[in-house]
Image 1 (cartoon, rainbow over the protein chains, first blue to last red):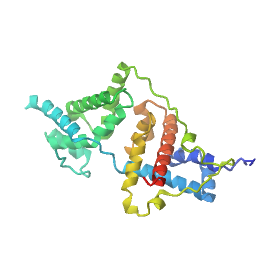
Image 2: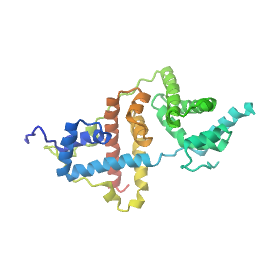
Image 3: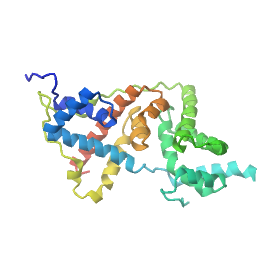
Image 4: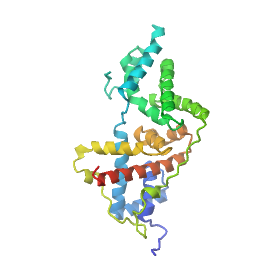
Length: 86
Length: 205
């Protein structure tokens, strides 16, 4: 079995750190370990990019699943709310 | 019914117009935020119908209180606070237990690593798979579908943090979780969404 040195991590560990890394929530030590691993690992670098893309894409467009019926219900609610005032 | 305001008309302007009695401004705000409200409410209550009711109550509270909105927080934050307060009391009435998070990260990546912990197969960036960067619409759809398939609390966390872009501290406060907990859940959710999108792209879906 492969013996791990104190400062190196394997891919299986690296993927566990990626999200916190992007959140800026890793300790300096873990950040360094991850960055060192990423430098030598195209697969984990691609993985990081995939997670980054996933986050970017999630925020790109809010899914707009408001049906026309739901919208007209809410506009009716608005009209009922307004009418006593006018 | 058309919503006449495009995305670049900001919330503050829509609120001004709402205060002036502009119905289309209300329709625009509802179009922008109602789906989010229902999704977040779903975290607290045990049916889609209850979530819809809580979201509707939130809009009534907005109409009642819009003249008192001081703009110290964003409209989105203000809206979510109202929603969460309502959803919490409804959720309590329904005796809904806060769901635990049963899935671990490793299940989304099961079998992907060899005994030494290295990837068995190469990881291909999504951009390479998609080729044409102008055609990333399907990926947008895949990501949102993957999010909709998440269980709670993953869906609420990833919706608030990655879709709505709220700071982690605010997500934690709204969902009554610790920041550390939000980060763990977020990590699991993102891992799952990525794996889901990858599987769909591989399957040609």
